[in-house]
Image 1 (spheres, rainbow, N blue to C red):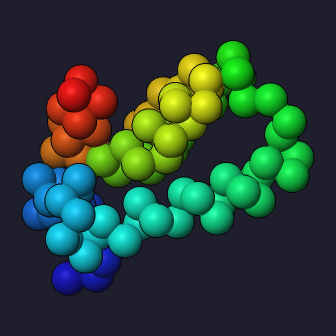
Image 2 (image 1 turned 45 degrees about the vertical axis):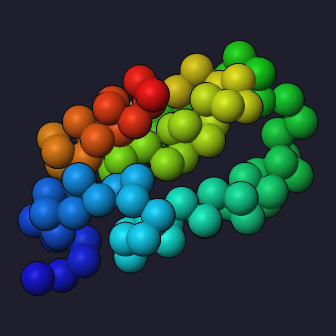
Length: 89
């Protein structure tokens, strides 16, 4: 199974927010990624964004905390469910 196969994400969706899971390493990419974007975006408040391939919602939640009106889409229904469940916490 390849890591970018839909099956990989379907099988790992329930572990998306588990800090001990390998997939959680993706969460840590947000800080450097958005530090780069901050060079070009001075104010995130009220911006609208679509996160294509959002998985379990790491970047969606990161942007929402900055005031972005964000929506996420993903091929994996199980990942979407994980994102919805976590964002409701």
